[in-house]
Length: 123
Image (cartoon, rainbow, N blue to C red; front, side, top):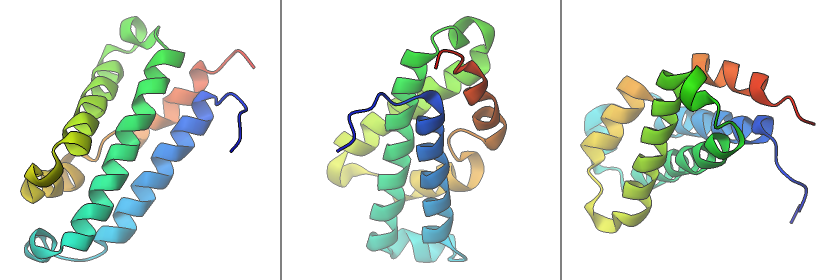
Protein backbone atom coordinates (compact mmCIF):
# COMPACT_ATOMS: atom_id res chain seq x y z
CA UNK A 1 0.00 0.00 0.00
CA UNK A 2 1.29 3.42 -0.93
CA UNK A 3 1.10 5.89 1.95
CA UNK A 4 2.04 8.93 -0.14
CA UNK A 5 -0.58 11.68 0.10
CA UNK A 6 -2.82 11.64 -2.92
CA UNK A 7 -3.34 14.79 -4.97
CA UNK A 8 -6.33 15.98 -6.96
CA UNK A 9 -4.82 14.53 -10.13
CA UNK A 10 -4.73 11.10 -8.48
CA UNK A 11 -8.44 11.22 -7.61
CA UNK A 12 -9.29 12.55 -11.07
CA UNK A 13 -7.30 9.68 -12.61
CA UNK A 14 -9.33 7.25 -10.49
CA UNK A 15 -12.56 8.77 -11.81
CA UNK A 16 -11.36 8.59 -15.40
CA UNK A 17 -10.41 4.94 -14.94
CA UNK A 18 -13.80 4.13 -13.43
CA UNK A 19 -15.52 5.87 -16.37
CA UNK A 20 -13.47 3.79 -18.82
CA UNK A 21 -14.41 0.66 -16.87
CA UNK A 22 -18.10 1.54 -17.10
CA UNK A 23 -17.87 2.16 -20.83
CA UNK A 24 -16.06 -1.15 -21.27
CA UNK A 25 -18.49 -3.06 -19.05
CA UNK A 26 -21.55 -1.63 -20.81
CA UNK A 27 -20.09 -2.01 -24.28
CA UNK A 28 -22.88 -2.18 -26.82
CA UNK A 29 -25.46 -4.02 -24.74
CA UNK A 30 -29.00 -2.75 -24.77
CA UNK A 31 -30.91 -1.52 -21.77
CA UNK A 32 -32.96 -4.70 -21.77
CA UNK A 33 -29.80 -6.82 -21.67
CA UNK A 34 -28.34 -4.67 -18.92
CA UNK A 35 -31.43 -4.94 -16.74
CA UNK A 36 -31.13 -8.74 -16.59
CA UNK A 37 -27.31 -8.98 -16.48
CA UNK A 38 -26.42 -9.06 -12.79
CA UNK A 39 -22.68 -9.30 -13.43
CA UNK A 40 -22.60 -6.12 -15.51
CA UNK A 41 -24.88 -4.32 -13.05
CA UNK A 42 -22.52 -5.20 -10.19
CA UNK A 43 -19.45 -4.08 -12.17
CA UNK A 44 -21.03 -0.78 -13.20
CA UNK A 45 -22.37 -0.16 -9.69
CA UNK A 46 -18.86 -0.70 -8.28
CA UNK A 47 -17.37 1.79 -10.74
CA UNK A 48 -20.07 4.38 -10.00
CA UNK A 49 -19.35 3.88 -6.30
CA UNK A 50 -15.64 4.40 -6.98
CA UNK A 51 -16.41 7.67 -8.75
CA UNK A 52 -18.44 8.81 -5.76
CA UNK A 53 -15.70 7.75 -3.38
CA UNK A 54 -13.20 9.91 -5.29
CA UNK A 55 -15.54 12.91 -5.20
CA UNK A 56 -15.26 13.22 -1.41
CA UNK A 57 -11.49 13.84 -1.21
CA UNK A 58 -11.71 16.16 -4.20
CA UNK A 59 -14.17 18.28 -2.24
CA UNK A 60 -11.88 18.10 0.80
CA UNK A 61 -8.82 19.11 -1.21
CA UNK A 62 -10.61 21.90 -3.10
CA UNK A 63 -13.23 23.42 -0.79
CA UNK A 64 -12.94 26.72 -2.69
CA UNK A 65 -14.92 25.10 -5.51
CA UNK A 66 -18.06 25.48 -3.45
CA UNK A 67 -17.76 29.23 -4.03
CA UNK A 68 -15.85 29.45 -7.31
CA UNK A 69 -17.47 26.57 -9.23
CA UNK A 70 -20.83 25.93 -7.54
CA UNK A 71 -22.26 23.78 -10.35
CA UNK A 72 -19.23 21.48 -10.31
CA UNK A 73 -19.35 21.37 -6.50
CA UNK A 74 -23.01 20.40 -6.61
CA UNK A 75 -22.19 17.65 -9.10
CA UNK A 76 -19.45 16.32 -6.80
CA UNK A 77 -21.83 16.41 -3.85
CA UNK A 78 -24.54 14.52 -5.76
CA UNK A 79 -22.06 11.92 -7.01
CA UNK A 80 -20.86 11.33 -3.46
CA UNK A 81 -24.46 11.02 -2.26
CA UNK A 82 -25.16 8.45 -4.98
CA UNK A 83 -22.17 6.49 -3.76
CA UNK A 84 -23.88 6.12 -0.38
CA UNK A 85 -27.04 4.78 -1.99
CA UNK A 86 -25.06 2.30 -4.10
CA UNK A 87 -22.81 1.19 -1.28
CA UNK A 88 -25.56 0.78 1.28
CA UNK A 89 -28.55 -0.07 -0.92
CA UNK A 90 -27.43 -3.67 -1.14
CA UNK A 91 -30.20 -5.59 -2.89
CA UNK A 92 -32.43 -2.56 -3.41
CA UNK A 93 -30.43 -0.97 -6.23
CA UNK A 94 -32.64 -0.14 -9.19
CA UNK A 95 -30.89 -1.31 -12.37
CA UNK A 96 -33.00 1.13 -14.41
CA UNK A 97 -31.71 4.07 -12.40
CA UNK A 98 -28.12 2.84 -12.80
CA UNK A 99 -28.64 2.52 -16.58
CA UNK A 100 -30.16 6.00 -16.83
CA UNK A 101 -27.34 7.48 -14.77
CA UNK A 102 -24.71 5.95 -17.01
CA UNK A 103 -26.43 6.77 -20.29
CA UNK A 104 -27.81 10.20 -19.50
CA UNK A 105 -25.55 11.70 -16.85
CA UNK A 106 -22.41 9.68 -16.23
CA UNK A 107 -21.13 11.29 -13.04
CA UNK A 108 -18.56 13.99 -13.50
CA UNK A 109 -18.54 14.93 -17.16
CA UNK A 110 -15.17 15.34 -18.83
CA UNK A 111 -15.57 19.13 -18.79
CA UNK A 112 -15.64 19.03 -14.98
CA UNK A 113 -12.76 16.56 -14.77
CA UNK A 114 -10.64 18.64 -17.12
CA UNK A 115 -10.80 21.61 -14.72
CA UNK A 116 -10.25 19.78 -11.44
CA UNK A 117 -6.44 19.47 -11.61
CA UNK A 118 -6.05 23.23 -12.01
CA UNK A 119 -6.83 23.50 -8.30
CA UNK A 120 -3.88 21.37 -7.24
CA UNK A 121 -1.43 24.24 -6.82
CA UNK A 122 0.27 23.16 -3.60
CA UNK A 123 2.77 20.44 -4.43
